Length: 532
Figure 1 (cartoon, helix red, strand yellow):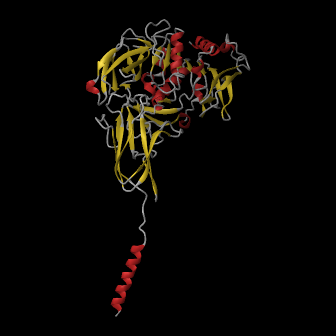
Figure 2: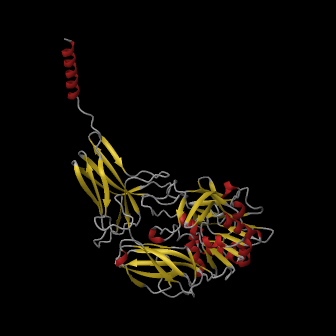
Figure 3: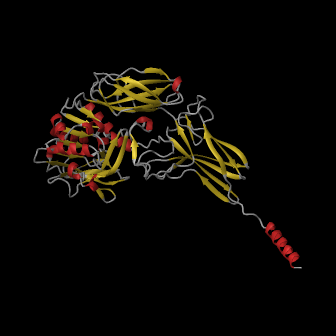
C-alpha cells in the first residue's frame, strides 16, 4: 500500500511545481554584428565597420544586426570617448520597441561627423529587467567588447617624423575618395608668396597635384614625395584634400643637413604631440594613448592625428611660436625629438648652438636627451622653455613606439633643477593673468613692454609650473599667477649659472597663445635678444 501513496505524493508535487510561473530573464541581444552595408575597409570585422558619410553611396552608413530573444525596447547610443578624465559623451541615439526575432538598426552619420572611432552601446529593456551591451572601459590585456564605428575622413601620416631637406619622404594616406589633391605648406619667412592654408597659417610650397585614388579606396596607401633641397629647415604640412571637401594634414620636420647651420635650434615636441594624440588605431573605440586609457603603456608614433591631422593644441602652442619666428624673420634650425635624441653628446650640441628653444611642452624625454640638454646647459648653453611640463616624464623610443617609464623627479632627476620650474598642477584653470614681480630684478625682460612690478598681462591656465627647492640658486620669479589652478600658482622664471648659461621658462602651457598681444610679443623679443 505504501508504493501507490508515494506515487500520488510525487504526482501532486509535480503538479504544484508546474503551476508556478517560470522565472523570466531580461531580454537578450544575440549575434551582434556591424557592417557598412557594402565594401569593407582594411581592418573591418564583425565588430568594427568603417563609414565615410560623404554621400557618394559608398560606406555611408553603419548597419547593426542582432536577434532579440523576447520583445524589448532597444536604445542604440553612439558614444565618443576622449582624453582621460573627460567623461565619454553620447553623440547620437535611437530608440525602438521591437518584437522577438532578427532586427537591423542603421546609423547614417551626418556629413562632417568628426573622423574618429565611436563605441556603440545598447540598452535593452523588458518587463523583467534590462541589460547593457558594449561600452566598457579598457582593461590591460583584454580588448573592449561591443561594436565600433570608424568614421573615415582623410588620415595622413609620415613614416618618419623628420627628414633632411631634399630627401624622399613617405606618407601613408587613407581615404576612400576617387581622387585626392596633395600639396606641401610651410613657414619660409615673412615675405613668403603663395596661398595661405587657413588651418595652419602656412604658405604653399608646391602647387597642388591630383592623384587617382580609385585603386586605394579600401586600404591605406604609401606615397613617396621628394622634398626640395632649397627648403629651409622647418615644420611642413602635407595637405591632402578630396573632391567632396574632406581634408587631412600630416606634419613633418625638415632638419638641417648638419647641426649648427644657424646658432639657434628650435625643438618641436613631437613626443608630446603623439602622447596627447587620442587617435584610435586598433579599433576598440578608445584612444591609443595613456592620455585616454590608463592601461596603455606605449604609443605608436606613426599614427595620424585627430582633428584633421593637426597635433593637439598646435595653434596655441608650437604653431604660434613658429608663426612668430616666421613673422619676425628669425633664422633657426628645427629639430624633432628624434633629432635631439640622435645628437651624440651635450658637447656636440653646445658646439652647434648657443640657444636651444623648446617651442611646446617638452613633456617626454629619454635618458640620453635629458643628459644631452643638461650637459649643454652646464657648458654655458642657453635654454628657453615656452610652455609648461617640460622634461616631466622619462619616455624611451624603440622602433616606432614610445614607452613611458616614470616621472623624472621620481627617478632622482627633478626637472626643476634643469628648467627652473616644474609642473605642479593641471586641469581646467580659470584663465588668470600674470602679475609682474621681477621687473626690478631683471628690467631687460620687460623693457619696452609697458609692464612694471604689479602690472598684469595675458590669461593662462590648464597646466602650470612653479619653482621648487630643486630650482637652481638665484632663480628669479619674473611673474606669477596667484592661485592659477586651485591653490597652486604659476611662475615665469629666469636663472643664470656660473658657466654663463641662461635659462628662461614661461611656466604656463599656452604662453604662445598670447603672442598677438604687443606686450607679450615684446617680452619674448627681449628674452630672445638676450639669450640668442
